[in-house]
Image (cartoon, rainbow, N blue to C red; front, top):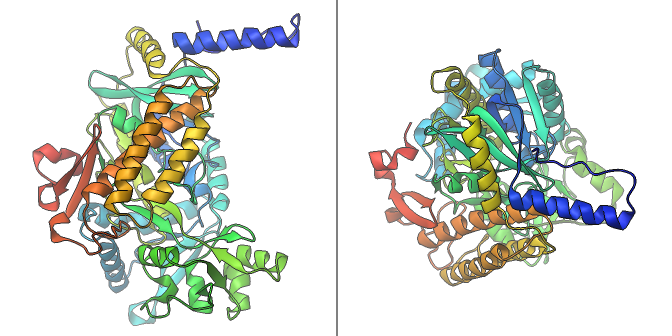
Length: 563
């Protein structure tokens, strides 16, 4: 029996039809009946830039492979890359400029990020971004002066600087590849494992359950900015990859490091600020008209964690472009220029928002994990950026490690280990898992619990943290989790997202409590200075966080961190 039911269109009055539909949905959810999607070689979970990069790399590596993208929204209209500024910063080819980039990246990492991953990004970044250009993506490149008076590329972006001008054309290119198929509006909730390897995923759509059998799986689900009440993230970034990993027994690392973006206008409209605009006359002012960043070396281009905390301490923050070069605004910041024209008398109000998760599934050079056949890339991973992230590096990371994940998955799928799951065994297990994982449907609204969770995380565990507030957050999360587990939800999708958001929040709070220092994007008001005893990573697994010193990251028992 399939997991979707067709209802008669005629012969029933509206009330009877609703009753029958409700009974059918209850039976479907409660019995956990499964429909099988077409088996594939490589299953890519996610619909943003990292997912598309990995799918393309897989088919370019082996044109005989079948690749399936499974996403919550349409491919190219999912995740943070859609609402990004489309900016890819990378290490220039000239050695002096490259060394400056390397030093800045290492300084931002603050002894948390993995040097081997950093070197991969530095070595492969420019080629990965220029490859997008060869695929016909509308990127414009900026350059810097280097040795001998020559100029070298260091940044590629769309004009206007909006992610959709990259993700939409790339999704059309992906859609033109006959080896790649896509299924949208599916939320993966569990990994299928068989004979010690990942063999697909279980997913939910409209209250029905589906199995996608595969030879290998790539998680490219993005981060979880939506766990905070104020965020630049889209509402589909609910920590789905973190939840999948934790339920499969994998660790997460560095979850306390969350970047809060200080460059978002929220009134009279909403748009992002390109940080380079501050080199052309723009400034931040507080409610007293003071340029509160004037005493800092980089002014408004100071490290994002420092700037976000200073903004957090102001009553109000305004983005002032009175002295800004008008021609520059028209050329490089058209969205802001359009906002200025539309609201001539209005002042631009700005506030910091949750933006990027530096932590996640431990990233390796081949994007593999402790589960054979399971790969990961993009913001769902941790280990590249460390304590903070360099501006413009997220999309470059997606291009570099998305491609690496796709190539590694293609090799695995084509090898002896790349086998699909045993169908008979899978059907019984999948139906049992769906039935035991989800509660019986009802009328409860998980959205209310999600809204409370987001308020708790913003108020108690966001830009400025302290032990007392983190303990309060932990207690509130436990109470919210208990309430969610008692629900008979009207929406299984909303309930699933609540489960993943709670798992993510618990990992952030547990890791932040254990890191009794301030470093990078993690600021403890009760421990305002960095501590040498914390040169290493917080590892969260099975509900607990433990500290793993940097010197121990390559020991066998910590193999999640090695190549």
